[in-house]
Image: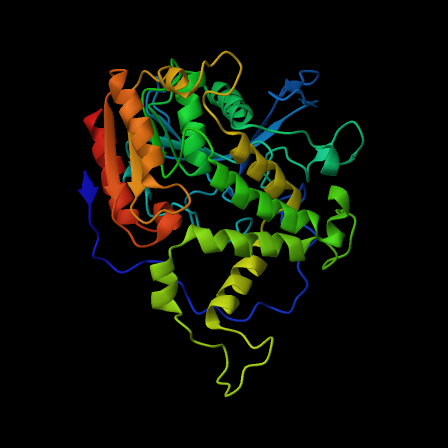
Length: 405
């Protein structure tokens, strides 16, 4: 099924203002003492360590989450929404005290919306390794009283899902009626179907993949090197620096790199072309095109709400994503066949980062195994970020799939 959308982009590539001159914080992480906003928290029992897939051990784990709607008495109406790389638990709701930005899926979550909170109890948690309330590198290590920093262990998508399973138990949810996510969130949704096939009734994976490709790993590697090459990163031990003294140059550069492949060439061409920031007759080395200012804006915006070490941890987790990787999975086909519940996949026509063939492989493999699959092609010029922009198309496909179940 292909869905077309003639509406204008609700979040066009704005000709962004020059980044503010105020020094960026050392980290954009949420930390104890900061405004809580709509976050809630659950923490593992004292003395019960959280053992990670790659061998690391966390003495305790706190998960930050938000909810919308009411949980049914039998807990049968719960939907888990999983966020992408730089997202967090604030999937819906306005910006404000404790939340620097509007919910990243605000147009899809709420009364009468595709994730209808008059019908569903919607949950979104910040992933393990994140920086907005869930245990991550900026969190305090109870063993030292200092931020984990460089000692924070490697985290995988499977570890994130296990932390979400812990949250579900604390909320009294034995089985999600759906797990939904785009990009890194789609990886989590697929892992839910593989690890806990009896813990979910449906899986929705948007603009995602069953295993990270060589090119995806290459892009990620360049972004991580941008951070590690910043002298202010200090091998991850930067949290005691003054404002402006953190690795904001490297993190902003990583964000600029990512923004290039998150969107498509036609969108950049239509919005910027060869326009320049200033009307100059002769170009100097550092006179800028408008597209450069746009990238600067997004780099500065991220460093004020994210943490460089978390970027490294989560970005690496995406590289490690491979449903068929070790642990007795038996390869991709066998791993996908662990998913036994109705599944929805969505592709974006212009997605150069997670191209449609990757979602088509998931669709075809599941269908061969006899799993009902609804596949939708989102016809959008916006590239990979279409899952955060083409709300009407994504919402229509999501609503249709959930109601068909």
